[in-house]
Amino acid sequence: MNGLRRTLGSWTGVLRQRVSGGELGAVPVVVGVLVIWTVFQILNSNFLSPRNLSNLSVDIVGAGMIAVGIVFVLLIGEIDLSVGSVSGLAAALFAVLNVQQGMAEWLAVVIAVLCGAAIGSVHGFFVARLGTPSFVVTLAGLLGWNGLMLYVLGTSGTINLEDQGLVAKLTSFYFHDVAAAYGLAAFGSVLYFLVYYQGRRRRQATGMPYRPLGEIVLRAGVVALMAFAAAYVLNQFQGLPLALLAFLTVVAGLDLILRRTRYGRSVYALGGGTEAARRAGIDVVWVRVSVFMVSGTMAAIGGLFLASRITSVSQTSGTGLLLMNAIAAAVIGGTSLFGGRGTTWSALLGMLVIQSIASGMALLGIQAAVQFMITGGVLLAAVVVDTLARRSQKEHGRA
Image (tube, rainbow, N blue to C red; front, side):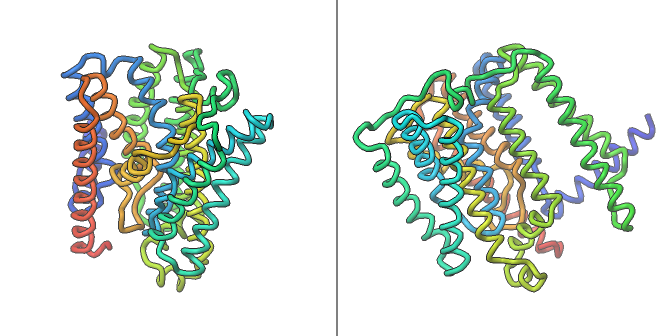
């Protein structure tokens, strides 16, 4: 008991020190999610029902995938305004190739995703090689790729996808066996512990500061508690959604790349300062091009999931609030607009906030205008918190 108290005290002290130094992490957004869920549950008891939470876990995937790509671009201090149009173009290309031209679904999917990567490389070329501002390049892409999507769709306007096809099942397939959700929860919890434990051993071996073992065990316990609670709720409805499994796999995989690879460290270094990164031997041009390729690829993947959700592609695909929601999700989740700070989990948390607001508003029958105002207020609050955190870091000599 005394050991647990010492661990909790140590963790609380470290957390307090980080918060005072501007290193807020995911604390604000996690608190925000809890507040939003509590308020909507009080107003409507169906909000935290297994059905609604299961639907919520699928609804966040399409735009969430796009937001993951946005995180990469924001990490180097750039912006990508074309992701909505790229997602619509990729979905339209898939629909035309598969439905109208009879191409195999898997091949049409590959071509659509490669199209997104190619578009990202074009944007990256203009930004990295020619020095054109990313705002201008991707704003042109927003218009140009949307026009190309309309051209690809032609006069048909709307193309319906096969209900039992590969893409349609991305958001309609569920693992009904309860072992799937609980197995994922156990695997994720063990993986979380092992990643942090191995990191502790490496830092300990090199004489660098490392986390106490008790803190790692406590963190892993909290993660396990949340994971098994989520698994229990999902199993009360239809089980583990394939879309959520795919989203978590992408988020976790790309997070490991950012945190544990030389490439990921290069991305963060570039966000901290271009000249410093260049002097450290980082290929600045390649890193810049690559993050736009990641953004384009994730936009294409997100577009396929969005098309899967409604089993159709139309002239409105990729338009509307999709772009704003994707960028807002990354920022609300904790990715800094100034570059150098954020993780792929920011996209998941931020999209959870946005979609929770939308879901709660829908249950309460409140018009969309109010939802936009609330989401805008949350975004502004996130940017203010980011700005204040950056100022605090400068005062403590950490930025």
